[in-house]
Amino acid sequence: MTTTISQGNPASNAGLHGILFMVSAMSLAPFMDGTAKYLSAFISPVEVSLGRFLCQALVVLVIAVVMGRSISSLIKEITRMQLVRGACLAICSIFFFSSLKYMPLADAIAIFFVQPMILTMLSAIILKEKVGVRRWSAVFIGMIGALIIIRPGSSALGLPSLLPLAAATCFAFYLVLTRKLSGKASLLGIQLATGVAGVLTLTPLVIISSLLGFEAAAWTTPALPHLPLFLLMGVISFASHGCIVLAFDRAPASVLAPLSYTEIISATAVGYVLFGDVPDMFVWLGVALIAGGGVYIAHRERTATRRQMASEQLVETSPKRHY
Image 1 (cartoon, rainbow, N blue to C red):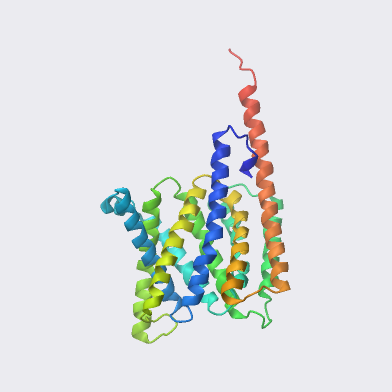
Image 2: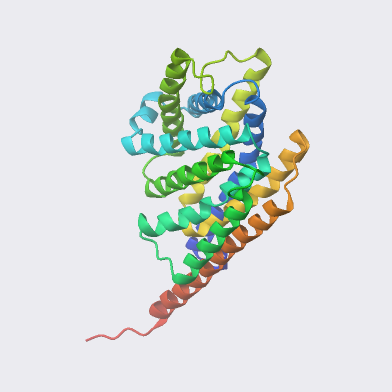
């Protein structure tokens, strides 16, 4: 990882900060997921997702006013690509929150852990980051781990286990777009665009489902005690995804991808404390394989970074000839 770069190097500090931001984001996210799982027992996952993005946008607007930013300047930062990025996260939210309605939080996140593997593939295809044969092997091992958790053909998790897999794919695209948009908008602008995109994506779905009587996504008026929980999700979403944006401003996607595994720590704690969920041995075996693949990817990145540093230092210290 980039933490191996010398401390005096600005690139080293940026890489370290990126890693710390990513770990912080992954530690915060399960608290939002636990809140969503609780709310999904009373209202549809789509409405829960809509409330999350609406509150996230409101949090951004409040912070902007406090910081003296004009709302019009933030709106000007919203681009088509920003909206596409936010729509990816909104769709991811639907899939993942829906999975929480049917399966334990830790199990859903364990399957969701294939996201770093998918991100590594997309980093090679879309971002043109170099991915060698050994890292492709690590991706393959991670996918085997996912199959062990899902156990196709068994009744352990069933079809709902495909929901976090779909969420992981959407989230990987979200991270790729985050990387491509790095440095092109302010943090508040990006966050507002995400909230607006989520509202624009999910509101029509809720309206149409309500008119057609499709209960899985239809509107249900939330109980008064549940409203603060939506605000809590908005705050956590702003904080965690803000950390993700800051992380991708400072480090490559292939370096940050394996750090997503830190999420299992807080996810297991939240799932156990709030819902009494404990992952079985197959889940832990799958997580071990997925995490092992991710750690190996991180190791390869660390080795590549060291070689690049050595090459750059050799060029800087070599005597220059004058002709």
